[in-house]
Length: 308
Image 1 (cartoon, rainbow, N blue to C red):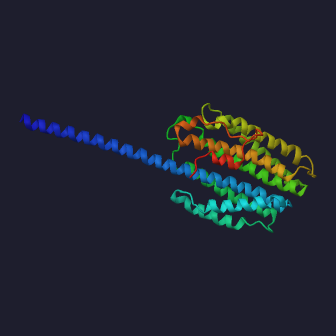
Image 2 (cartoon, rainbow, N blue to C red):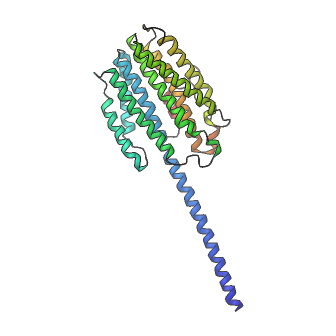
Image 3 (cartoon, rainbow, N blue to C red):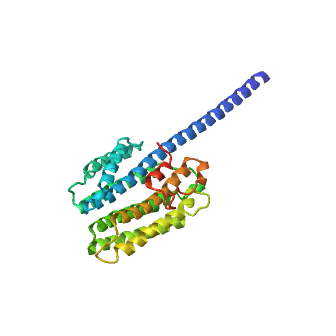
């Protein structure tokens, strides 16, 4: 009898040990699966971020060209080719978002050739296209718990909402302002719209700046450069475009100031993606700058984020 009881006890212990091993193995597998899903989401978000900022740039350049500034035509053509290549590699999206991606690609085919288009229709079509890209970013970010309980990443909702939307309103202001400067004049409706865009950029960026000053995070290290670029752009809108019907500022000046604002806002997105890529990235370096001390261009900032 004692031997039988010992066998039962031994068997129970063995079963418990196997159960613990199975649970540990399941936990390890689950963690690995979460890391793979998170990495796939990061790569998708990086590609979508590049796509949206490129489409915004295309909108601004095309509005300048359609309003008479032909010096932007070469840059516009080169950018369209880059966007074609980017869309040729579909991102790894959740199954319920693949239809939205295909719709975006189809919309791009209709708007990329701007020759002979009405400037107003061109802007409207670009707005819709870019909004679809932003929706893909936001839906992808919400599809899984990217922060996974890390309190240092509690700021992420601000990135996907206030920062992304501030960048889009700034992009719309850049496009409209570039067209106004290219034409050398503006009408009342354009100035009303530009004042609205100015207010949206100002409100959303201020909200974002107040929420992202978390010491030790990537976005916090880039806030000062972003504030300066956004302030310079808003001041230019006030001084150069909203003061009177006649406009003397060059279209490229407006476009470049707008680009610096948009790029530094997207640099906050890049910093968040770097924070998500790993714990060592939370202490990210300041945003890259040019020798002039200005924020780096979109291409330089893109090199700072993980490549797919």
